Every structure is written in C-alpha cells, then in structure tokens.
Image 1 (cartoon, rainbow, N blue to C red):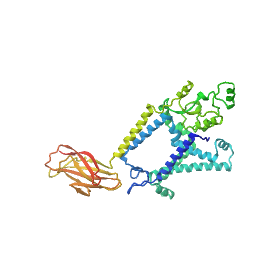
Image 2 (tube, one colour):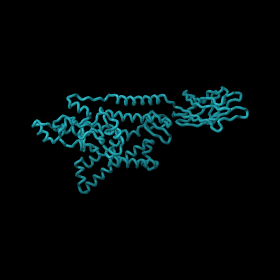
Image 3 (cartoon, helix red, strand yellow):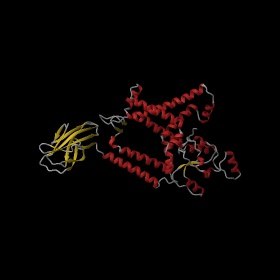
Length: 459
C-alpha cells in the first residue's frame, strides 16, 4: 500500500541516490595520465588493481579492504545504537530494490485494493497485459542491475559495446544472468522473506541494541484503549478513557514486512518509518496530534506516564566509542595512504646452495629480487647493498647500466619485475657465517628509497 510523508520522501531520496550511484558510477571518467585506465571506479582483475578516483590499490595492500570492512561493521553498530535497524529500512540493497519493484507494481497494477481485485478477477486480455508489463519491467530492472555490476570490472563503454554485439567474454554474460535472476526473485517475489528468514542481521542487531536506542514505537500511553473513531468519540463524550488509535490498520498495511507495530518491538520490523507516515496522515484527517507512532524508546513512554519530559540520548558512551573507532580506523587508513611507497622490493635468497665458494676463494650468494613500480611511467632504480664490505661486487642480470658500480634496473609502468642478483665477497674478506644486509633501491629521478633485509651466507 502506498503512503506519503517525511519518511517516504527520505526513502525516495536515498533510493534515487543509491541506485543512481550504482547504475551510473562506472561511466564516470577520471584522468590518471598515460598507461592507466580512465574509469573512475574500476576493479581490474586482469592486472590485479583496484581504482577509486585518485586511489590505486595493489593486491598486497589488502589491509585497506580490511579497514573498510571494519569501518562498515562498526558503522552498522553505530546506526543500530542510534536508531535500530535504519540500515535495513533505508539503505539495504534488498530494501532499495524491493521498493523499486513495488513502485513498478503499483504503477502497472494499481494500489493494494486494485491489486487484490485484479488477483480475484478472471483472466482477460487486460489482466494478462498488465501482468506481462509488470514482469517485463521487473526483468529489465534486474537485467540492468546485473549489467551494471559487470561494468565495474572492465571499461564500461567498451564492455557495453561488446555486450551489445555479443563479443563480450562469456563470464560477463554468466554473471549478468545470475544477478538478473537473483534480483528478479529476491525483489519481486521473496521480498520480506529475505529480511525475516534469510538475513542474519536482525538476530545480531537484537543482541546489540540497548534501551537508549530509538526504535519505531507505538506510543501506547496515548493510543490505548484503541477503538473505532465513532467508539472513541462516544467514550470521550461520556468522559471515559479513549485512546487516539482508531484501529484503522493503516500502519500494518503499509509495512513492507507485515508487522503490526502496535504489538511492540518485533524482529521483523526494519525501522523504515512508513507506519509513522501512514499514522500521521490518519491523525491529521481526524484532527488528532501526529506522532502516535514515532522513533522513541520504552523509557520515554514510561516517563510520559509519570508526567516527565522525554529524554533522547543520542550521544552516550556506546555511540562515542563506535564513532571513535570509525575515526581511528579512518585516520590510520588515511595516514597509510598518504605515506605509502610507490615502489616495493622483496628478496628471496637462494636455498640450494646458500653460498658458492669460487675457484679464487671468493664467496658468492644468489638472490631473486622482485621490484614493483606503482606509478604509471617507467622508472629506473639504482640497486645498492648495505652491510657488505665496500669491494663487494653486485651483479644484476638484465640491468640497463651502472651508476658508481651499482646496477640500474628499469621497471615498466604499473608493473613488477624479477631480477637475478649475485653478491660476491673477495677472498681476503673474513665474514661470519651470516651477515645481515639491506637491499636498497633508489629512484634515479624522484629519489624514492625502498629497502628489504636479508643475509649474506659464508662458510
């Protein structure tokens, strides 16, 4: 059943915002310079990169994903501490797409009474055409949902052309089919069953809530004893107690999960606020104050019974701790992002043999080093090894040159390179069985320095 009011407008606004971002974000361009994709948000599985505007994430930087997951989890806890399941009621994808599907259903088949009449009516051309139109629109929305998802994993305009000309990879068609089917089924048919039976968050949320959290609440201190409008007016004329609730069931009929909020807090309630709008509309029509249903606490109901003013404690230790964790993790991630290196080096010592004694008595160790260039242009790194005698010879297979007897290694834009390196200590140097050493690479142009530690083995 359709309703209108403040919370319905909020839900419409968030629906258009979130779906607009989801459907159109892949088409936004962002210039990262040459040798880099121009799509603002892209998960490039082929090259093992993730891009978000000016941020580029490499596979070894998975800790950023960890940080985002922590922030998302604590944000859910914070929302719950403030106003219960507001995530479920306003931002959950299941809620957003179900809202959209129900809007289409109302536009094609009519509101609740008209749909009930259509269900009972015999099959006719009109009924078939309306049902067919509804399911066609549902399938188009579901298909667009699946299509938008795959655009985050490839250049969107190119992939759209390939999909339209049947030249796209088969995996793209498979994922579009999967997401089309799941969206069509979950938002078109299962709807509240997903929230009630499949989603674990209601059970978790129920364990996390406290008596200070605002929840959609029927203010029974004002609404009871309930009765029809005529019955309540008759009681009022006789000076007998009469509540403001007129038993119209509007709150129940607009609820997407079928909850009668007058029965108290229930696990099925997603805190969407539509029952508040429906009840406020009825109260306005009958000349009663709005707010019979609203975001409130049981403590405030008891306070009003006792003649006290309600108290709303949004800022309290629990919410401050949650907000503090979000700020702390965000600050750590921002610091790591601003101070991260755009080059990397890892070293793997030869295991068999760990050293070689050459014919002249010198000792040679072999290493495989991997250099990473995270910038979008070619870079030239000068390799140096610290901790060894000054006359130790450094050889790098594939080096492009030398600077002060130090090999120069070229690494292409946004790529990694493995290089074979040998260190040879002269015979007259007496070395312990294991000498700690540091491999240091220096960008010959920008001066960026990155190091890695290992050991030089000797008899």
